[in-house]
Image (cartoon, rainbow, N blue to C red; front, side):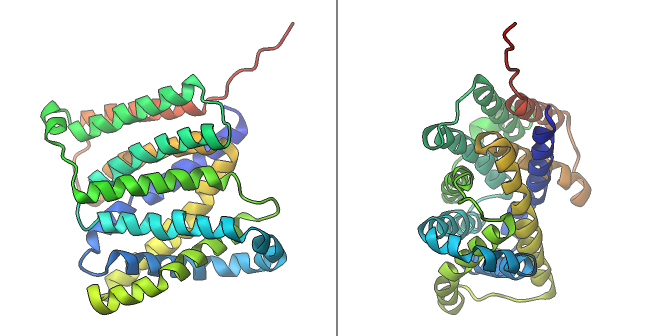
Length: 302
């Protein structure tokens, strides 16, 4: 791999590992907060956490933001307000593993197809092979070594919310490449976090008052810090940097690592066993990523 590809791959892998816990959190807090309120609190904390590092660049770049306000509103709406609200809504109706699996299948496909259509990225055979291997690996995780688990797999309301969330994140991945020139990564995220929080504010107030109040506790605050700083500021900075190095199609395929990372985390956090089928499916997923990100050798005319 070229150095740029290596760095991009490392960034995307790290972001995927951080995000892998988000689906577990979304299930864990269903009785503590409504999905819109949780998303609002996440982006509020994300905004505050990145503000000290981004405000100087934001002030310098404010004219560029004003000139591209429609783009930033669209990105904040789809990639932050709607996307994560859909994830946390799905958490009320389906399992964490279903969420990780479905999201990891949908968003690379959407991103690859849209990148070919909108950004005119060439759809190389490696992209297709990488996606197919990623899907095969995820299906093996679902099967757990038993074909009956595939037959028994059923889509619930939450699964459909997760399909919609995957489409949103796939779209976000593509439009990150259209980020206006002159905008730094940290001020870019500052504005999108803030837009996401502002859009959700009135809806979260209604949800807290009339649908589901937020049950604040030490445990809930710790979860908010995890999703507001780790899952938001840190992971998105890494992921967006990877997109600029690898492109949306290649980067999005690293999302197939999320269910694998969740399984590995379960070994250490939940004391679950890591079985042979998980190891095999992990190797297949990683093979797809390597094929997809390996640079094409240019022919040299002699």
